[in-house]
Length: 104
Image (cartoon, rainbow, N blue to C red; front, side, top):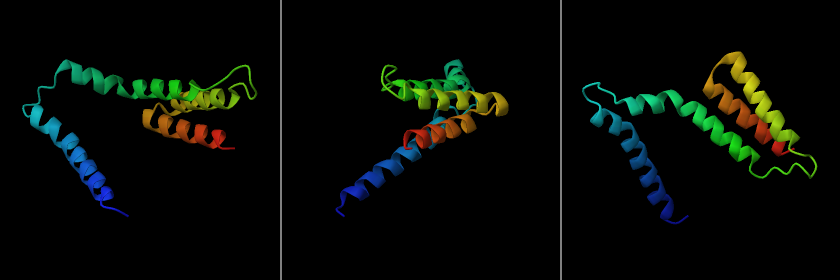
């Protein structure tokens, strides 16, 4: 292995450190702007919508299997979310179901 891996690890470490320190530096006095609250509230559904578009981007409804695997994974994700009302569980379970069906 060459030294590029160490450079990549360094960049990842610095990026991770910055993402953890930045909120503490900007919001010291606990006055969180309304746009941050908006992002905090709506980020999980946004991620789920992005994952749905990613799932459906290469689906052809005129060629077998007609997107049945993708639709099943989306339906299972919706059912899991309705049952447990947990975005994180829904995202991980839906991704796992999609990857499992996609690799069969």
